[in-house]
Length: 323
Image (cartoon, rainbow, N blue to C red; front, top):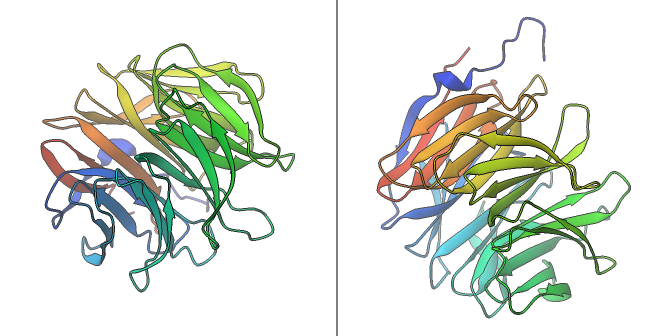
């Protein structure tokens, strides 16, 4: 952080824009954190994906192609940051060039896909991971559209996936489900490492790094908490308690000064911002219905922006004041 630069205070968040255009509820949100313009994607029960400019609230693109509810979104981490993957109840994941609105590839799973993540290799090979009601987590070659490997528990359902690269070079995929266990799968070897969890249904999962560079895993659970775990030992490092119902979605970002922030959303009608390091709850955003999706990022000018959506209320973009 530059000298004299004060990090934004999440408690000063105010609604900057209300995004209008979807004809039904929005259940997925994702900021393009690697892009200077921090585009926001939203996925809806109206079968469409929309791409927004969070600074103005303008809709940049409407992506048509899904035949059912869009349940999951993730932007690529490449330098251009223009690729978006979406997935949904129609059993497909679709890779989009958001500059042109073109669907570049359709990956067909055959069962509802509830979660999707990029899992690119360091050599540049684009890969995507999907999970859902089939009980099979699949790794795909995003360019060729081919299945590369899979982890299967056919009697199960998987709610969330998140992919990262370990410090030792291993690719790791975290997988969540109703049994309260988070499986850590290594798709390059096929090994599934010791599951971690506390026995309560885990709805969502995200990898993150503390300011010291250490890799951690964040989970959102039916026990009304979010938790931070050491993926190597399985130790629960911190419990974020405050929600009054299931925590169904989470997201993370790093402040310009390095502090790791988590956003959680839940069935209690709130979205909450937390300091992952201290466990302090920094902000509560209240709504008339459940909060089904949340994401957060920082604009180049340092402002914190948060997107929320859910049942009974529109999609909002919140922002801290300009400094």
